[in-house]
Image (spheres, rainbow, N blue to C red):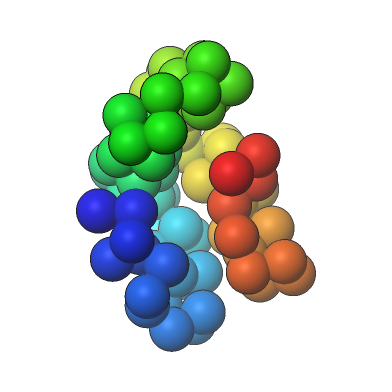
Length: 74
């Protein structure tokens, strides 16, 4: 799912991360997908944090994606 998200247009990525409930779902799916693929402890810890605080981090990620074309700490 993380590869699907990164293949999307930047505008679509930002819109998915700005909509309140949808951004939480997108964050959880993308973060856990990337964490399970890589097995990195940092990615797993951040995936757990996003699971709890996903809406707030989703808005930060929307701005981060707009500026740097990737999610925060990815």
